[in-house]
Image 1 (cartoon, rainbow, N blue to C red):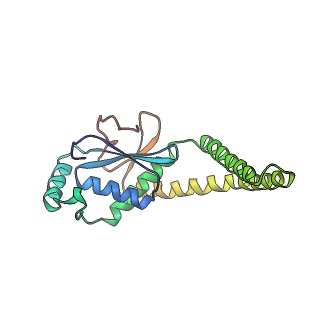
Image 2: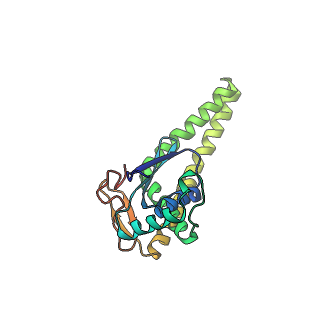
Image 3: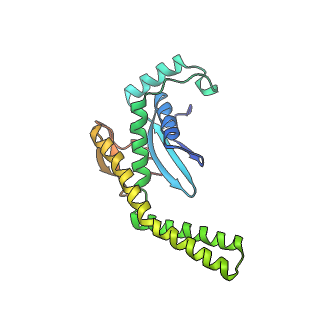
Length: 196
């Protein structure tokens, strides 16, 4: 980040809270959250320089207050409300990356592969085939439940963003994103704007 260039952070072990904290700290040093996308079995977090005067002033103040931050020293205190909003943006952004139809197809593929792996471990006798068939059917019956829970989770976070004054906009790739009050899509012409 010291170079002032866009940054992509790829993580496999994650939590919404941890990713939101990471983006929040980046904001304290002159960056802004741009996007969160699922890439294979990992998440890619995109942060870009924030060219606003307020961001530059905040970054200069925090660099002076926390000179050892880049070496593992103390960091600016976390603001829980800001973390909650970043988390909501990340949930909505990652949820809008795929359509429900594509998400269903991916889940069918993953669960079928999982059931096949169980069958492989049990060997290919008749009993194993029956067990794998039952496990596969049980997993498939859970798909609608998973999709409903996912939609409700995204709807809850979308409502949180709207209540905070965020505006829905469609980015260049056709994804529905939410812009902070008085803001625009992150990146301001940067290569990570509107997704990478």
